[in-house]
Image (cartoon, rainbow, N blue to C red; front, side):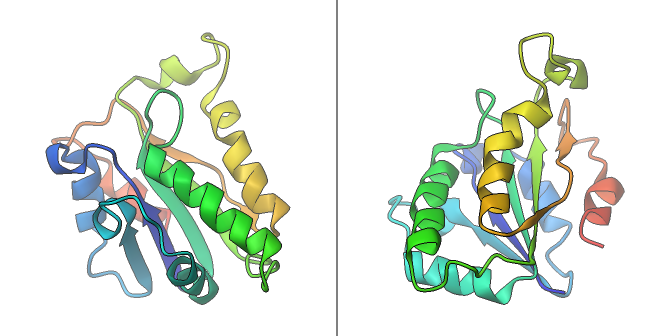
Length: 163
């Protein structure tokens, strides 16, 4: 099973949490880490290249730090460009049967996302999951590292998401 991690981070150069997470997977067989932030510093996404990566993957993971209860802007641009190209393109069924998961990090505690502010973490991620399910992917539960700190990461729990 081939896993494609599609990663984005608005402040990639200055943050250590996601760098440490991705670094812990760098020698994992069958995992491709695709960093949108470094691949597209100009924000211009290559649709054909992205679709080719998706075709090769069995499992697709969006990984990102949670920003203002959502994804970094480059990942939203990826969704708009790539999912639209899939739906209206030559291969509208390329995500059928593939699994999709969100892995995110949050500076806030788990209680911040328990719904007392109006939405749970699951509620916040629902539009993304719905988009992939609409295109035929099967969803796996969101995995979040709350109160994320590079000095104390649950690396084993994170790595288990890819087994």
